[in-house]
Image 1 (tube, each protein chain N blue to C red):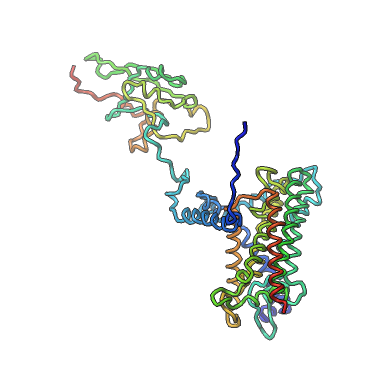
Image 2: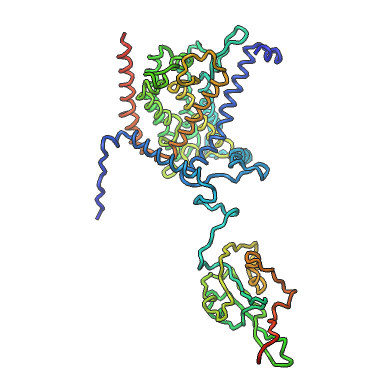
Length: 189
Length: 358
């Protein structure tokens, strides 16, 4: 079964070709002028290193481990994300911590290590869905590249700091241990 | 002129010839690289893109990517100059020159400005002075030589794609030559001579009171044929049958690389420039300012600039057309050449011959 292609009959005016060419050149000239007068920032092309694309709201890019306002990590090391991860790229080790456990026996859980292998991660967002504490977010950074495999293995401190600068938050280092312990000094028991 | 000649310890004629050679050579070499830039940026603008804008002098001065031509040139010079083992080595080396030299030679008779008197002798702004007996026949003849550049490049490569491209391009160029010549003859007849200086002189003043007395308006059909044929001669889209990305890859220069390829590319722009100069001289009044009948008082540099403006504008039209029109099919091309353009130029010739019957 072939498709019957209808032959387009051109009028003598179109068959002159000169007129059609003139019309076509008008079209290209219009595009030329339009593009020439459009400022660079409004053209279709995003000139990548200088300009960056505004990612849509639900975009799933590089993860961030969220913290409370006082700087304490939100993650409670419940392993939900690790279980949910279809790519098996998250590996968590939990630890107990408390600064009050001598007096009140107050104990909580937090991740000792929280690793995401970005080479395995498929950015599906399941960890974000699974998290009961809203502690892990997939955000808008898509510029993930490194020179070796090891540096694509993000640890806890990397993940906390992934959006440190764009947010205007201070970058945290492991040396500053204090913000990691919650300063809930007046805990009602 | 005398002072310049005495400074250089030569005769004024020799000094003037040196100046003219520098001018003609500088014109082609100076315009062709920016033309490649104009082609790329222009095509980008037409297609709503941006085009090359990254290349920068010393990593800082970008000037709209104008340095891209320079960067390309440097790159071509440092690339490996490869001659494929199955190619005919001598012809393979000769072909880029055969493509490039005719493109340059065409400029020899084109007057680039008003002739002027200095110290009792008349100086002309064309390499060959008027009355050399060749006149406009010279660029026509030399332009036809460009076929050999393509054909030799294609043949010596010993590559099937190259030969296909070269053969059909040469067939196209030869068949468009006919219509071209007939269109030109009408001009020679009306002018009463084939010297470019006479042709330019014949186009000064006004025509019908409102138009410049150019042959475009006096012989519009002849111009149409000439213009279209010039596209075919310069191997530009919509007549770029030497190449064909979708059919025969790069066509005649498929085996070429490094500076030989660049020379072929430069020859293409040389041909565009040559074609523009020819069209300017024959149909757009050469160096003449429109509506001005007597150029005796106008400075030479102004006439030169007028010529340059016309040539560059035409070059841009060449680029513009390339990014507007799709290419022809081969049979359509032959149809157009033999069944449309040739009869039109014949009718044009007969009409003007009839009008001149005296």
